[in-house]
Image (cartoon, rainbow, N blue to C red; front, side, top):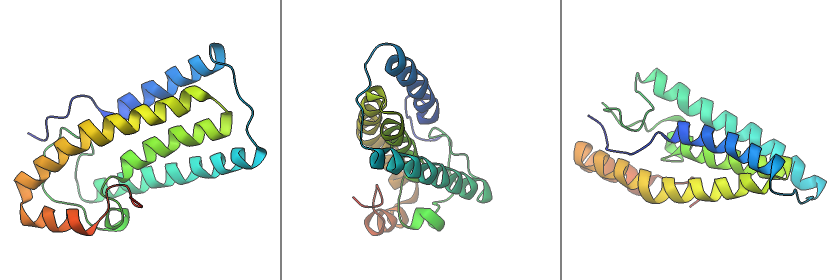
Length: 152
């Protein structure tokens, strides 16, 4: 049995994406942004998708299940995981934020903030404790060598 994470971040991400669209289109007014920010948002969407699929491919190549509650057999330390301990979560949050920049939907911004708070304070600590208990010093070395969010 893997970490006791409550909820699946991918499912929560998709639900927030749909709810943000509905709220942003029909309830909350849009606030026009600079065209340059719209372009930055489009680039962010592309980068987010690249990060997500790169991470997913690494999980598949190591025959690991990306669902947080799954039991893991090894720590993936290659590819994007050599630069960021949580690239899939980074992709979810940056995708939501990029949706805000692209479509000027404030609900996407609020979803990105809420998703970040939930993942950073409730999902990742549970996963880190599980990995620390399972892999000990190997995970501690990885934890200290690689940043949680790539730049932070």
